[in-house]
Image (cartoon, rainbow, N blue to C red):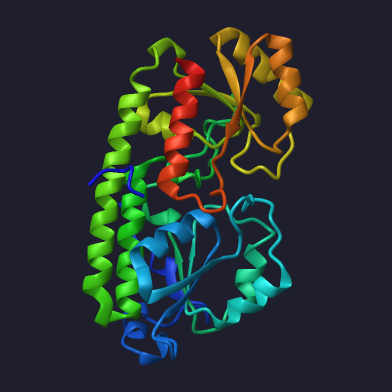
Length: 316
């Protein structure tokens, strides 16, 4: 079962509830035949193309899945069309990343457009998330937000897959064995992916396992695979922020001090500033970093294979 075929933390009840001020028990909802459309399929919405891939794999032919953020679009900044928003009212189940990944472009839509009986699950709170990067030397005693980019760690994705499986089974108990089988097969592929990434990253000299990126998105690679995240052009976990002159000056100093080999640049994210910083410190710009979304027709595993190869080739 190879990858080439193509939370652990405290469960907060408020993260898996119906929208009508979270009074319904999702297990009871699963016993309601009204959860299934007349065509026998669960109607599900997600906030990112990455979650849609996971739900489609676990749900298989028993679900219809649509993402508010289509393939190729950044969930931090994409504004869903009115047509997509209108479809939310027909959704029985919504999966989100949470942890502030979905910003002002999406969060109000979820608050105002969902059917009161829609079940809503935040995945990010259930996977033992890490703190976002410390962006200021004086903020170590402040409450830093959690990093939403948990999908950079396949073992945390495996936890999310279990959450998806449980929720689909609650909504459609007659298909629980089917969802269990699909989840089990996919978790095996995630384990293979984890091993492949670890093997690939170990080929990078330890002194060169240093990451500078367009925004603070690779913290889970530091947590799981031993990288050192030096900084980012946008010192924030979201791409809808902007760097200050002080941020840029600090990053330049860090790059010079740590002898980073290059800056991994995301398409459309402060490209001009990134190239200027790289020129000032005489390091390469490594293009092609893709973290927030899938390309059209791409799977999560394919995205992670591409990302890990890019990092390996850029730092080896």
